[in-house]
Length: 223
Image 1 (cartoon, rainbow, N blue to C red):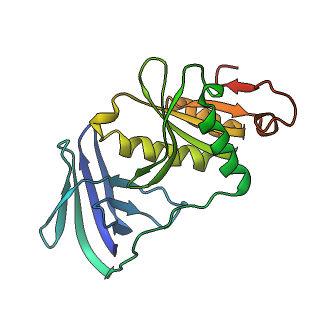
Image 2 (cartoon, one colour; image 1 turned 90 degrees about the horizontal axis):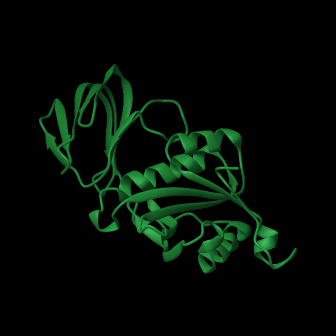
Image 3 (cartoon, helix red, strand yellow; image 1 turned 90 degrees about the vertical axis):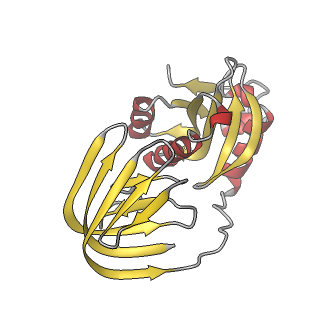
């Protein structure tokens, strides 16, 4: 990973055009080619980014980051305060707590409880940003990217959004949908998810484990 603390401007041209005026920022280049621009605020979401695969044209005082879609992000360096490279190695990934892990296993065994006609394709589907909990196909043949949480909060929606953006570059997956599944989903997270076309599903963990009854209970985003 390469980290550059710099006073810079950033211009993006693609599906739309955006510009970040001159300011002090962190430019992060990951080993897979992902380039992200961060400010000194927020937990993790960059101001602008280009997911891999990318090519970086290094013109000393400015970079042009391009991807196969024809999108381009130009980073102009006005002053560089720090430039370093670090070898992080292979990350083992996020370890889920016992409840969240078992919830994922139960849903993988019976995906139809999340939506009728849903069929599991793969658990822990790898992306450049980490493993997707569940990859499924719905009744109409769409690929459904599913993030499973114990408590559904905004950061989980953002995580799923990043997975969807990354997987959209894989033409073999066809049409993509997102599904956010949790025991409970906070109203703010539900609003954000639904504004992005992501289906929200609440499931009863105890009932899934058979503690209450053999019947399934779920609440979809339409209720």
